Length: 206
Image 1: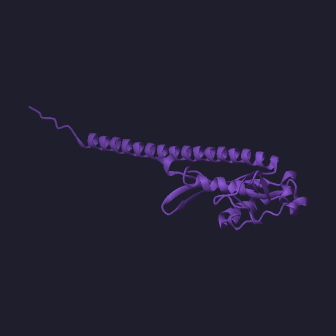
Image 2: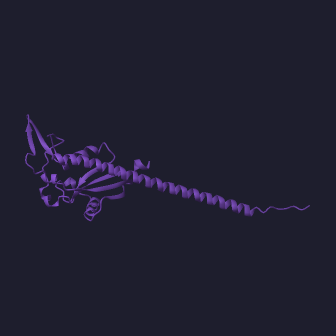
Image 3: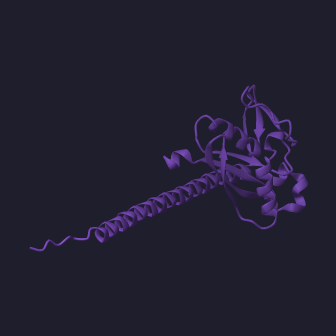
């Protein structure tokens, strides 16, 4: 009686190749899914930054159109020493008011938002009147890119082990701006500065 021995090596080899191929496919799919999720997250953060910028520009448009707004003088809102206009302070019914120009208004709004919102923004310029509006090196680089024709400037950054999306668009000089910025008379339509926005990505990546 003859006994036939089945050769197992080819079968084992094929099974090994299949298992390795399947494992490799899973790794590739996992990496692609991770890349796709990260890309989608960054796009979402960019859209959030753009919406934040558009909201700020609406505030600015209102404030510029009205030439600012008078508010009661208080510990929180003192007269702006860098604002050189007539009737900066007025007195009505015994109450003193100070003119809050668009840049000052932005600064106060951003200060209020620091403890209430995760997305942070600020108004900056290469020629700031107020030292708080002085740009960081990254912001200065973005502002110079606008002078070269860029429409917006975006960058991903890691700061103290946390990831952020940095976003900036330019702010242009309008005729109504000349009330506070007479020196920009010849620069109407030109770039005065930018709104810098920082979006934390941890909430998006979670």
